[in-house]
Length: 130
Image (cartoon, rainbow, N blue to C red; front, top):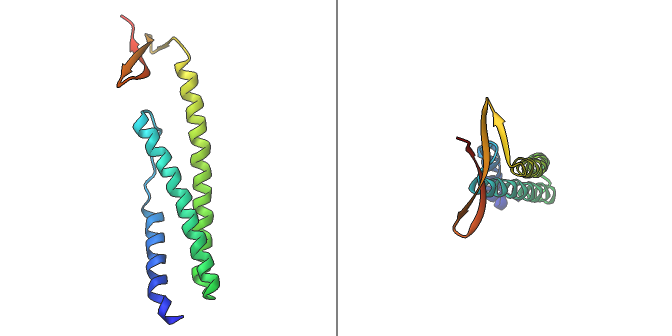
């Protein structure tokens, strides 16, 4: 067991550091931000796997501290993954609802939907009516 202690300490420090240092993000508005949101969601899933592996390693080595930290990390990461998954779906619904309208008025100014082609992809944007 003593020969695994340096390895366990490194795994514990790395997984804890990654979970603590993971930044939060604001609402995504562009494709790049949506891709970043997807990557962050996948990171939380991977952290949950790492926490579960750490908990199993703690059980195998009969180390209750490592088991508790791994289980707590896995549960928290799973919770964040589910939050991000649900948030992403509601964001997509909101975007679809917004861009299904041909125009809207905000603070007395009218904005019309405009189709934009960029790199062979079709996008929509709203421009202020004159």
